[in-house]
Length: 111
Length: 119
Image 1 (spheres, one colour):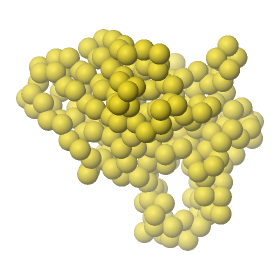
Image 2 (image 1 turned 60 degrees about the vertical axis):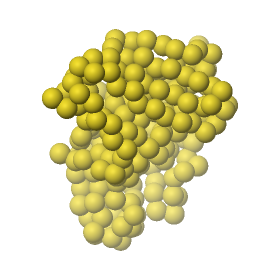
Image 3 (image 1 turned 45 degrees about the horizontal axis):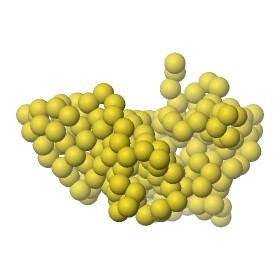
């Protein structure tokens, strides 16, 4: 299959540990943010979202934190599993439903 | 629920040739997006349709790229003529249109993409 993100920043974590993936966004007017997971040969898959009027949102094993002061977004994955290995993108919504994607981070889970 | 379908999955052409990609969105999704994803980068929006109308095509290189969604369902993206720098994965996504939200509901569902290699 195709490889996504051969030259992306890489985060390597031990299986069972927590992962934190960071993203900086540029537009203070962005009002909505999404984290996507992209596995090799597949399209991005929605993980979790957060609106700008929130600081934190939790899902199943995932938490997104938003710091609007420094325009920073993070994705925390609890008890990282081998199936979490993928490239993770943040996306910010600008204007009328236009989404700008970040460059992505490759997560490698070590057994 | 069936996902977003795209074809072909892979295409190899020589520069200056033409190519077309096809997308079938999730049933009932009024909004359709085409993205270009160059290796090592995040997806970049090329064009967005709401039903059969264009909402945003500001980043579509209109001298060589064209897209249509004639019946508000399937869509095709064409490149003519292709350049080496067009080598990328072309992703189609769709989302539900919500009148309450005033536009597309936020979750975009992506297809598997078409990997284009221009030689």
